[in-house]
Length: 207
Ligand SMILES: [Zn+2]
Ligand SMILES: [Zn+2]
Image (cartoon, rainbow, N blue to C red):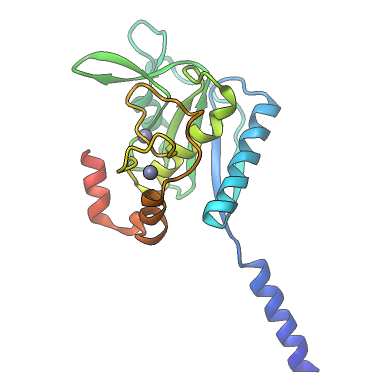
């Protein structure tokens, strides 16, 4: 009897611990509705469970006021790199700063280049903006893309597959087309454990 009970207990233990929990912290810098945040959470959770077998817990911080020093000189949009650096912490939990206002990075010298999101690969924080997102229901794909950069320290789809979530937008993002992680990205993310490979981290960071 004791043995059977012990067996049942250990089976229960295995079952409740079979699915890994992973936390992501969303930091809204603009007003997001309850519905927008719930849709984001449900879509991400569904995908993480299906693709990675991971239960994603999304926590949402209260809205934060971003300092003006994170903006461009004309105060029209946010410098994505500065935003990411401003929120970086030593925590292992991945943080996603969510904005509705525009973000940019510098390309070709000092030219401002509007972007959808940015991760510095190094650190625990990334930023996304819905400003340039034509179809707002694709927000979760955008968050997923930046999350993968940040969590796995993974660069872009090596096949440049237009249907792959990790395709480099190169200024022409079409998230409607993105349906999956291509087999090459899946292989690299799931089996080669990029996040623990220091060499890949350095290569990705220098890219
Ligand atoms: Zn891919
Ligand atoms: Zn990217």
